[in-house]
Image (cartoon, rainbow, N blue to C red; front, side, top):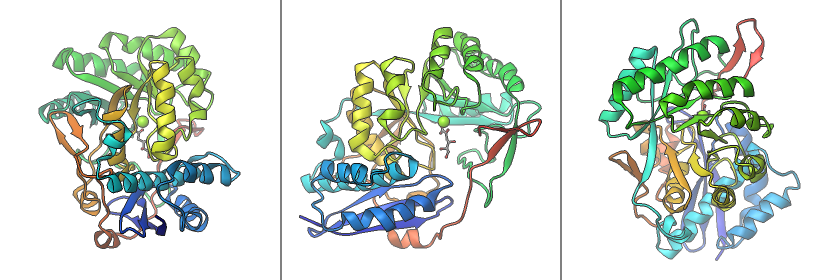
Length: 402
Ligand SMILES: O=C(O)C(=O)C[C@H](O)[C@H](O)CO
Ligand SMILES: [Mg+2]
């Protein structure tokens, strides 16, 4: 068996997606996601100019060998561009292997460990009252776990609070838009949001919150303590994690569950966090860290240390990543939760998929492979449109973490 053709497909049904389609001499093909929000064309070029020419002619059944070839063979290892490109090839190859076996991917990975995948949705509002209402709306839709983000008094924009209700897309401008951040205003405000949510909805709903890398370790520790009475499922990205040691200080000062990893690219970015049990949930998604092949290694290491998965699932991760993630989530023994931000109907039309939502859970469906296709005619209707993520400054103009 051999790979006959491999190509990149860029489409923008409301937002940009970079996909890979790998075709074989047996008529079976596989699809992978390589989207890196705001830096899409770098990955497209890495694939087109450097990766895909090395893949054509190889045996698609040799997934591990191709992974090692692309990782070791480049000499230049890791990083979001390289690892997203490898991930796309890897996802497509697992898709092919499962289709050849006539099995849904979860069966090939070892079979289902659960009946459905617990997901959390995103509730956001301009202020506490609106955010509380939004959480109520998500509960009404059947969600059992909800992330809550609110506008902050005195700040014009806050992370996670979009203009629309159902679809949030932060990459919104052809050059980065600028927002302003103030840590004290945020820290003084957020505990009140969760106090109100518990007062309104009681103890049953799982509540989550994303700090989006904005705090120092000590500030994160203080926020964690302040939020402890409200029994959060997790506090996410409390501080930037380039320095994994930073989490020790947070851990030593609060028992709030911690999640991190949506920007990580490999096991090396999280191995200290995991081995020292400095986090509770690892968020590295399939697309960011070399695909199923490498994510399995991260999940297994995490399992040894009772760290569970909670993969990133914002809309910049295409339905292909969502499909692959749901098969992985269905199998992985140390599953925690899956983020789920709904894609627009235009995106769903470009990527027909077998997965579906029911009663607060996502199900991967039983189609052979990862269950997500790409409709190339539909994709061609939406040309690439430059779109950047915003940047953030402190009130005095100092650059900060968005
Ligand atoms: O979904 C989340 O938790 C995020 O933090 C979303 C990110 O801001 C987004 O994926 C950036 O592209
Ligand atoms: Mg996040």
